[in-house]
Amino acid sequence: MEKVENKINYSEAVRELESILERLRSGAVGIDELAPAVSRANELVKLCREQLSLTREELAKITDMPL
Image (cartoon, rainbow, N blue to C red):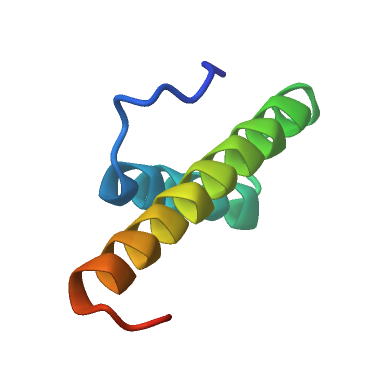
């Protein structure tokens, strides 16, 4: 699994997370792929959380309202 790059946007990260989750649920991930798949999912979740936090901060600045 490749490292999350800043080039990936929130929507792409969510789609990839959904894909990983579907593969895990369906049993399509073998034991050798399990750890890398979970690691990638964790990286994507971290990226999504960071992007959501940045967006929340930007919205607070724009609206002059604490979020």
